[in-house]
Length: 114
Length: 109
Image: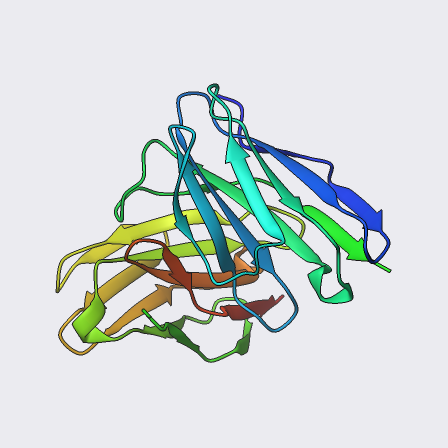
């Protein structure tokens, strides 16, 4: 079974631009979560999608948004990029949302904002 | 907020040593505790999901225990090998996963 895939793997953008990251979950998984990791910080929860609906959102500004498609693939968008948005963005999928379901992570997208 | 603290932040051990590290969480806000291993240049990989007080899980040389009353979980590695070098993350789950900052383990051959 193929794992979680994320594209692109690396990205360099300029302040003020916007970016879209893509995540394809494991086949059959319907829940997708997004995380940001910056140096010295743990994985910070961005949002979770299930059945094309955002279930939860972390404490991030409105510049961060996402969506999920009917095939469970998900995208996240960051508008008006700031230097502080430079980070590793990970997505994770699980069968369904739930506290006891393991999340399977993708390799991440490394975003650098200059 | 389901604050999760991990200690130590980093650890260097010799090959063959056994080691353990701690994940602490508010005992009043416990739902489930997840352990992940994150090797450099790879994706985080799930190790254990623990839900009940007194839970013990084992996978090969790695095991974990859970004390929900006092709000901690221990991860043990017996006879550490260089391939165990990774960052070990724990997460408490409510309506989302709350991750700690991890313990970075380096096993010296």
